Amino acid sequence: MSSWLNYLRTHRFPHIWCAGCGNGTVINAMARAAEDLKLNKDKTSVVSGIGCSSRGSGYLDCCTLHTTHGRALPFATGLKFANPELEVLVVSGDGDATAIGGNHFIHAARRNIDLTLVIMNNNIYGMTSGQYSPLTPTGALATTAPYGNIDRTFDICKLAEASGATYVARATSYHVSLLKKCIENGIKNKGFSVIEVLTQCPTYFGRRNKIGNAPQMLRWYKDRGVLWKPGTKEDPDKIYLGEFVNVTDSEYCESYEAVIEKAGGKK
Image (cartoon, rainbow, N blue to C red; front, side):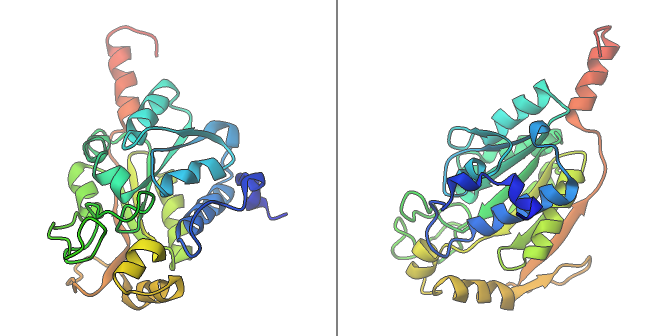
């Protein structure tokens, strides 16, 4: 058995995601990243909220926590705060992280607490039948936008950077080598890390918007994905991938410990 499979609860397979969904690829990349970093499963925790992506915590073999909609980051923050030695990863979706969980997202980034957030962005609410999300492109169709979405979308990576995250990256479910590398670097970063992963949802987003099936959607990522470099003049028809932020700043748990020590408490 491949060693990375040891980070999966293989007895829970086959998974419950739709045929062609990209979420399984992301969980695969997380397991491979964990193996490359030799993470101790007893000291690693994966926290998720509600949504298609959030089912991923149940397939990763470590200490896992499946929480309420949009609240994965507060639970993860409490977990990390209570035991700073834990490696805490958060699995979320575009709705879970940027709609009901949007406020938690910006404040986790602002605090720069040592969490790694993997956002599976399929541009739609997949689990609840295809409503539009804050990441649904303007003009795209959804069950709650049958004539086209009129809202402007968030740029997750720019929002994370503006909010204070010290590691920000983007990959797709097609660019799996890049995805694994970004997850590894996010885990190694001592601070709040955000990895946005564009993942295909052929069942709701692809079919309704006539993008096609899973292979066609992956080809769409392949044809449009380009590696971002500083000074890049952005083309709206391209998907910019890679690392956007990788800096060092004070980490929240360590800063809090310093306050306790300053106040005369036990470190």
